[in-house]
Image (cartoon, rainbow, N blue to C red; front, side):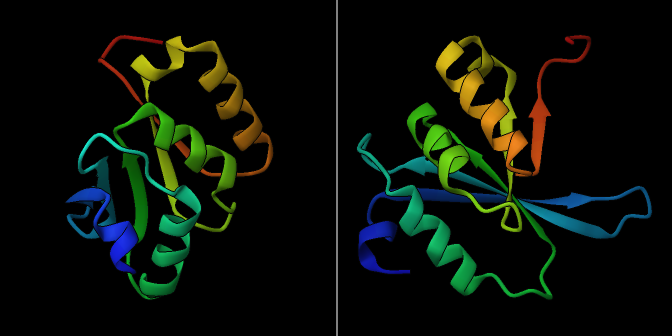
Length: 117
């Protein structure tokens, strides 16, 4: 990854385990480091370049809604999965972007409070 991407994001990760207690994925939390914008295309390109095919599936959890929207617009269907937090779906523009990404075949994972539809 180039300095321009690393200088604009903060990362965290969490292993995702299946019911056999095997790591089946990695949730990567992405936030803007200084409240600025993040170039989603550059980030996706760097991930594609550095994430090996033998590694577990990658699930991106973008904190800024603007970054989430850009990831939905630019992520390839064969790339990382994108996590959608239920609170972001209240925004009608973002909900439309989610539908378009789903139609393109982008793997999406919904998260919300237990008991919500």
